[in-house]
Length: 443
Image (cartoon, rainbow, N blue to C red; front, top):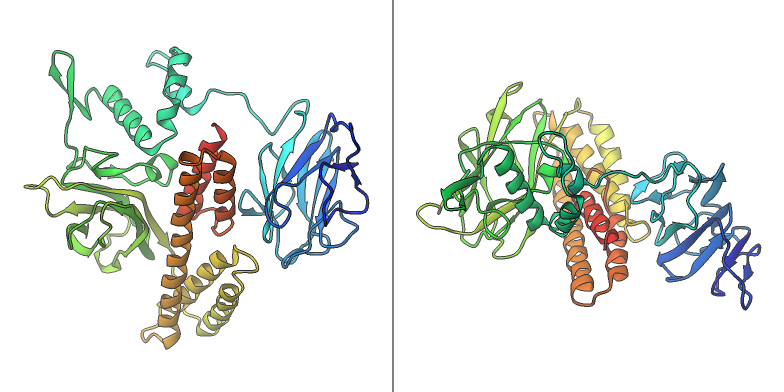
């Protein structure tokens, strides 16, 4: 049985409006509309709920992209699960498209076309599988070399550092300084330490979040790479693309990108702001398969100068190139173009379009003579990717403004959830938005 706290335009037949003095169910869950036409509306359910366009559903949403019977939430021995009911445009859980039934956790985001609901569980189930009790990431790192847990209160005292990028960089630098016996920090005597330059110490590329979220260079967040940043990686074959963000590049040609000792490009001007989604193709003729390759971000002005510059979100994306298939390439292009044209119906269509244009490019890559469609695909890839990056940057800016200037955590969360719908789970923009949401959840 469902109880709606506020009467609404799209309330279903089986649900009764709240009576004066009526209490909320003691068990069950709440679905709150945090984005869409019924913004702010809350629905209470004891066990099961369905959402769709027709009146037989518990929550009725009439908007483009919503199917007659779109999604259901149901109880299975005290655990709540979500299942897409074969909807035409799909259902997304925390931005990821549902392929099968998934266990719901308190605070999960459910997106159907332009509507996003937040799931809140009223009571934890016995033997709760949607939550775990464990040391936090910072507390887990606050274990000394002997395996003894140090003061957890002290560890919690630095959580605010870990939640921010500069704080995380400071903690990682300190941790490396302690573990490495002075790798980053050099003792000057009398209790003083100075940060030594690590420009010539190579980093090893990794796809994990620690490397991805780190900032390198010579600026606000890192002071240990004045001259350059060296990243070593193994080339597996196929196409290799560098993706990164940069800040502080205020002179033409200041930041050069080298691959195995050869310059392959330069970072664009960013001035004193962060610019994300920058890309650089890594030429196959310069790559060495099955062995270590060296990528370098080289600030050509340092030394003798001390120019501030930094990079972040470093990714080296390697993709296999399929056999040429012009006919399939044309089909993929048409599907991608349709998805791009329908971006207003379903935000995730934009990412689907980007993937389709990339598949078009890949299916034509192996041809000795490229048809005009190849260049069309490249142009669309550039256009769509820049549009996605702009939405990403705008979302981060708006969320930070809502949080820091307006003090509205809920508004900031809504902005980020809304932006999450545009990106695939493996997109660097998705990963950063998800990290920001996790940080907001701890506030």
